[in-house]
Amino acid sequence: MGASLSNSAEGGANVGEYVPGLGDIPEACIACVFMYLTPPEICNLARLNRAFRGAASSDNVWESKLPPNYQDLLALLLPLDRFQDLSKKDIFALFARSIPFDENTKQTWVDKVTGRVCLSVSARAMSITGIEDRRYWSWIPTEESRFQVIAYLQQIWWFEVDGVVQFPLPPDIYTLSFRLHLGKFSKRLGRRTSNFEHTHGWDIKPVRFELTTSDNQHAISECYLDDPESDEMKENLKRGCWIDYKVGEFIVTDTDPVPEIRFSMKQIDCTHSKGGLCVDSVSIIPSDLRERRRRLLSN
Image (cartoon, rainbow, N blue to C red; front, side):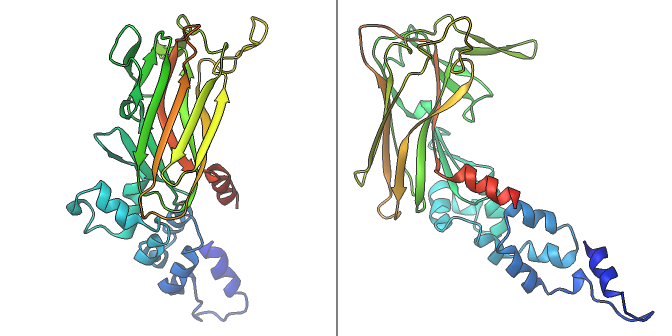
């Protein structure tokens, strides 16, 4: 890129005449352009030369990529000595790696492309009916969860999982989803396998998902976790993989007071038992995050 600009400028120049290059662009001008770029684009351009590298370290540039309430988030999540001397670029990197809190039962992070806040709540932070009884539930360590552990249901009649999180999410529209997996999975000789020995009951009645917020927003959805029409000739796409089941959307317009979100999933029809289900976490992410990422990365 630098060579092309330099060569084009040399078109009508005399030998020995000074030709401006990319290194002559003032850092302040480069920083203004960086305000409109994504963090990955800024980091790539920082490799060009010293001026671009200097602009890519500007606090003004990186503050524009951080959530509007990032200072409140830092004060809530970390001790002062962890961030008081950090540059805005380093603070962005800190958020992008995700920050665990509440004894690592919850994690928050900033999306590396859009700079928007995401939140995840572990099954360990939820109230699960019968979780203390190993006849029904067990905790399984796994690298497939960001929390390194999931709850596995062997069999139960009354299935109910409830949770609540109070967190200063910045203003946005958010989607709340449960991350679930039908079947018990493991690795053998480096190959992932799923066992459906205990998987039953999820094709008889739907699971009811629900969320409510402290400002009286409410969403309900119902879904069969197993395919009621599956047979040996038709592949069951709901088994053996992690699926995010959308509960609903809610809007945050202000962080004062701090929003509180309650969520649940239930299948409490006691005419039949159900089992063979892994419960990992609940995610709360901006509703158009994937579309916004795709659009920014394709530009």
